[in-house]
Length: 197
Length: 179
Image (cartoon, rainbow over all chains, first blue to last red; front, side, top):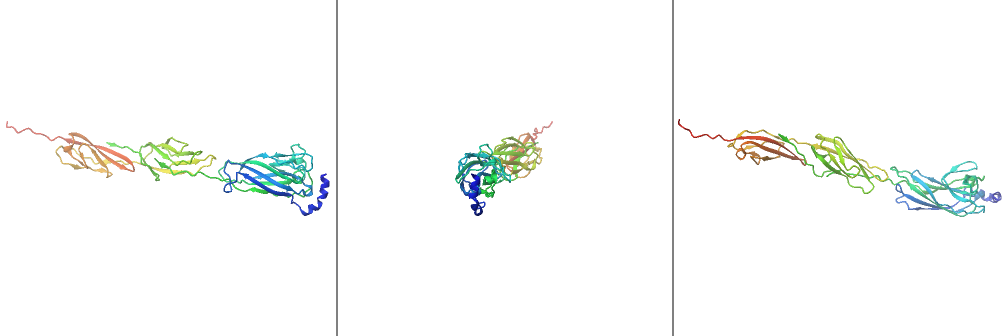
């Protein structure tokens, strides 16, 4: 079925190379204060992508997170809902690492990825077919450090032609979506003066 | 004979801080930064930190310190809950010792007039039997040894020394007899 759809999308392929991602948005809870977060603070990031063009019959394979060194950890909260456009099942799973089986072989993660064959390996199958609204949430924790470090958060949607097993390269342009680009708010204590009582 | 006593100086944030010679029990404080902070103090030898490490107030024993300036005698660093440290704050300490002296005087006859007392450094106060203001008056003293004290106060510290003045009784002759 996917190969038939590929033919139908050939014309569209020419017009919209790389323009596969839908409208993206996010929320950060709590919102950063002064463009930053404190050491040890926990932040919930929810990301939404509305639609996917499926150019070249590429389906959305996953959402890869790029995190700055100031994040101590990231934990999954809620996964995207299965769009189910090809009606063959599959599920969105949280993976710390996924390696594609199509060339060029790349490894991405952490993030949410679509596991069509439900074998816990999103990299060896196709993505989530259709054009839906995908939303997921993760919880991030700021590391306890005394030097400013990056709190970058980027979400990169990727097609199954990039990160799965599909052979089309129509959507092989991975464009990171910037969620946050601050640094840790380091407040060093100021002590003194010494008083002799 | 010389006696030296020390009194802890008044509150001071002047650098260097003045500490009386042979003082045991100086208290140092930094303003509290609130909950979750710890304070790490360093005291230069021969001073010893006797209590309060980890808090914003410590007690220090300087009794073994020689007179003079001790650079960076006390240092403190605050650490917050994230393990981030402040820049250290230091305080120099000057161990103050003043050695008063009394110019020896006497012996005197109990009928001798008052004499001026001389001590260094100037500005101290006199006390003792026979002392009237800044003078020693034999006729106010006791026959025999009299202890006088000279006390000097500087930098909140009090130092004193003593000296002995001998007063002899006036000889009393019997009436002349023709043998």
